[in-house]
Length: 346
Image (cartoon, rainbow, N blue to C red; front, side, top):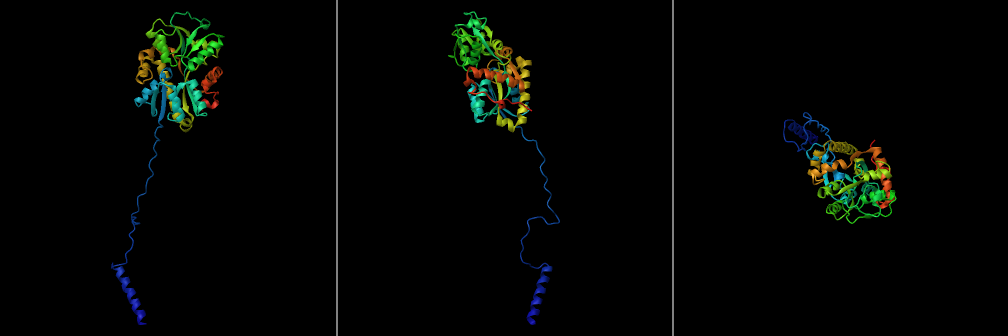
């Protein structure tokens, strides 16, 4: 009985000490605020507009790149609708390589090269728009009188390799000429231009603006034939389409708004060029698309720069590629592209 009483007394004393602030067993101090001062509710951050998709664009120097000058200038001044990174190439093969490895999103290049890239990448690129119709002319040094295709019988005509040669070959064959020799000794237009200007070549196929450059150096040169007009005589009119702008299909599918914005700005850039030749020529030189603004300004009216998209683009380009395939299958990559080659916005 005494033991029970002693235990009850000890318990009572311990309870009294606790109630009066005496020493109690250590307890873990909570790290949160007391219930009487609850933490502030965390607000969700406000929604922000996603940053613009950076668009990497490659431009081929010369006529194919002329229409891009105003957009490049606007981007450099921070006035474009989205972020662009532009580069200018002198060799179409560099652009082809960039499209294949995915380091460029959009590029301007010859139409047959675009078809070849499509085949090389198993449908990895699409044509957004045509940017150049026919730009080829037959130039002579005046030693031979040429006023029609028939006058070329038995002659040797120098032409740059690839696209110009294939186009000229089609015109020659369609005119029934079997004894015209097409010489690709000067594979690059600039090299052939120098040979023509110096008098080493009597008859040549040259693109603008090389025609203007050559005639500035040698005023005796004569533009004998407009090969676009000659093409239209033996092929569906308007189907000579030499330049285009393409997009990687993966980029287009992932960034439809960026592609739409580019098409709007690119179309405006070309329209501005047609309305302001002198101003655009200055930008062409400043952007590194062509070295001489004065020559570019003089050549632009003969360059047939255009902006053709959608169904009209597909009709003209499909006709052109079909003809090129008949001339030389390798010129378009060995086979004709499928319908998915043509970017038709909904």
